[in-house]
Length: 244
Image (cartoon, rainbow, N blue to C red; front, side, top):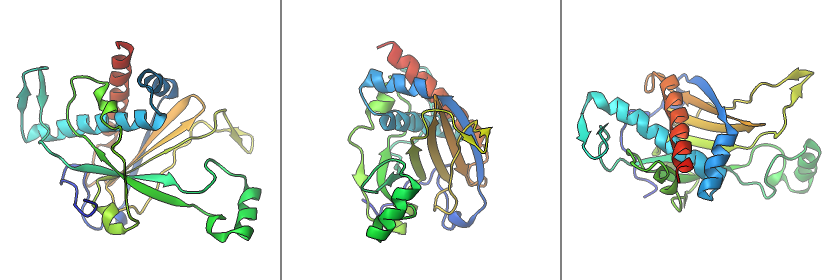
């Protein structure tokens, strides 16, 4: 299963995409809204934002496929343009240090002396997470269907490049910070060089959550619309859980 390639969709990059220029956009949403979903569904923030991402990608793909097909969904009155049985997976980046969270520089330097394996620098692994792409009648199902879907993956470029996107969620400072006396308005990290046309980062900071989208503009020319879909999906899921 690890070496199966994802379905070719309007989100999937071709071979060599890691060397192409990238475009970076971001959108800030309320962290409290995400916590509301988390608490209502008795899950983690990771589960909630992955459900939002799954829903946002489904909305985006449904619109992209709309020019190719218009299958009327009679039951809910929406046009379902998404082909069946799409295989779409994310390479989810995770911190593999024995001590989670942000460590002080002094501690990192001590670790470097005592155990170079866990000292200075990033220590990152990943898991392969399959997303269920499709329109859902029940907004809560967009989140629930992710439970138990995580699978371990071997460290190999071939595995990562077979997936559609890279994804991460990083917990930032819970209070506002400053840099040389200048208040930091938001934190928006991203990366370059992954073998994907799409990378999505969620970064919390205070009461805000910033969604950072990095795309190959030749594959995804409208990243702002993708941000719209992610933000709208959070709104739909939040409204859905309030009705439970």
